[in-house]
Length: 147
Length: 134
Ligand SMILES: Nc1ncnc2c1ncn2[C@@H]1O[C@H](COP(=O)(O)OP(=O)(O)OP(=O)(O)O)[C@@H](O)[C@H]1O
Ligand SMILES: [Mg+2]
Image (tube, rainbow over all chains, first blue to last red; front, side):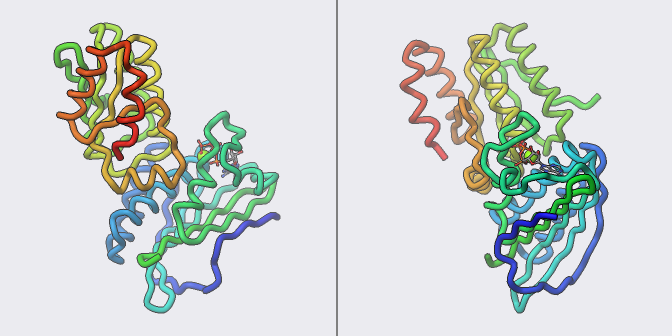
């Protein structure tokens, strides 16, 4: 298994959690709404909300496209006084052989722009990807209210 | 089936996107718009996304496709009303929106379209001014 992390030094405490299944493109809008509700509940500003939901949209799109869907764990979390939304995208798809390559701007096996993963990483505060070829991929992101 | 309405205003087509599009709806809009450009021999397409709160790479690609395909049919495309938070996010995501002209609102977008079709042969010189609007 290969891993790549951005930040992620403190372990956040989970306040609420909910799992959303995504197996078809129409499931994307309800997922966005769930994420938005969480962000609003912890009073995240509009720009950070927009970044978070856009990041979620990219990751869920990858899940649908490369792994025929998966599950998204939507959590509100806290570290000290700072609250945030943590999203875990888990699929049982083909996995990613070379994560460093997949994280590069412009790399795509789907004949696309290849900016979903690197772009998502720029939009969030914490980013973690784990993937095992043949068994699936898990991407975890956190967007903090103050961050 | 659910469809985004396309309004005809003189030589222009006007689309106001009121909902956050899921993929099928966006792809239908792309196809419908190109057909409408052809059928009406439209000179310009104005897409108002002021009610859209999320533009991801897929949606961005659709906007780019519409602009590029319209250009092949001799029509100009202007996207108006990009929300500030959406603009910030697009830049950080790294989505170039190549070939998509933008304006602040519908009124400015109409002005831009009018100027683009009036000064058709100086089109290229307008590029830089408009792309930096946001
Ligand atoms: N959940 C996943 N399962 C398997 N492979 C994946 C998954 N997510 C991404 N990948 C691989 O990583 C590559 C890069 O993903 P990324 O989202 O950055 O770009 P893309 O999806 O190809 O293009 P874009 O997101 O710009 O449309 C993909 O082309 C694909 O090979
Ligand atoms: Mg992608």
